Length: 312
Image 1 (cartoon, rainbow, N blue to C red):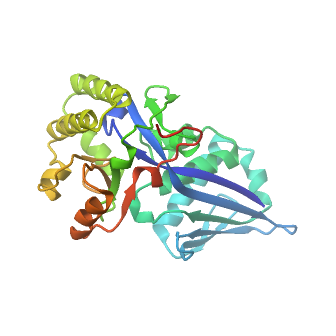
Image 2: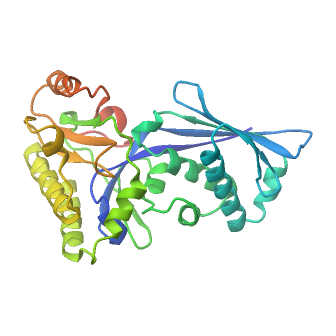
Image 3: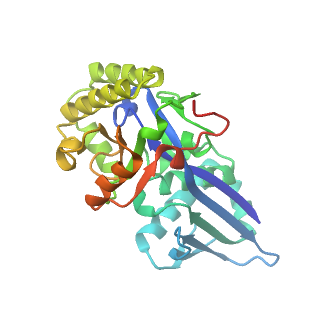
C-alpha cells in the first residue's frame, strides 16, 4: 500500500494578478487530502477509484479500465471524465506509468476539509498524482486544470511562501505576525469556481502592468508590517486595486458594511473564504459572523500550516 498527502491552500495576496507575474503570498493549510493505492497479487483489467469526504462518506466512486482508462462504471460522469483526462495526461508525461497501473486494484482519496470550502480538492489531487507518477506537477496542471500553480507550491510547503511567475519562483518566508490571533478566516457559504475568475481576469483589454507592480509592493509590505493597523491598510489597498481593475464589488461592501474591522476576499472573489481582522475579542468576532449565518469561522493559527516557525 502506498500513501501520499498534500496540504490545502489559501492565497493571501496576488489573486488573479499572480497569473501575470505579481508576487503573491500563499499559505498552506493544515487540512489537506490523502491518497492511498492498493495493489493486488492477481492483476485484473480494471481498478476502482473511491473519493471520501471529510465525514467518511463516499462522494465519488468509479471503475476504470487499465487500458486507456475507459470508464466502466461511475456515479458521476463529469468527475469520472476529469479523472480519465488526468490519468491520460499523466501517461503522456510518463509512459512508464502504465507499469504502475498494471498492479493497481484501488485508489482512495480522503479529504480533510469539506469540498465546498475551496481549499484545493483539485490541486491536492494533482500534487499527489504527480508524486505517484514521478512527474512535474506543474506540467500536469498545465495539461489539466490550468491556473497559476501557487496551490501546488502550497501542497508540499511547510509554511508560508512567496510565489511568482514565470518559473515558478517559490521562496519560503517567515510570516507569523504578532497579531495572528486577530486574524480570522470565514467561509462565505458559496463555492466559487476559480476558472471562471481566471477567465474574467483574462478578458481584460490589456495587461494591468501598473496594478501588478502595486500588488507586488503590497505583498512585500504585508511581510514587513508589524502592526495590525498597518496590515489593515494593506488589505484595504489590495481590495481597492482588485475591485477597480476587475469591476467587482468588495466583500465588505456586499455583506459586511457594519463590520468594524477590515475584510479581504481571497482567491476567486465572490465565494470561498474571506480574511477578517478583529480588534474586538475572538468571541465577539465569531458572534458577528454567526449572526450573518456564516458558521465556518477559523482563527489564523487553527488553519494555517507554519511548521518550524514560532508565532512571535
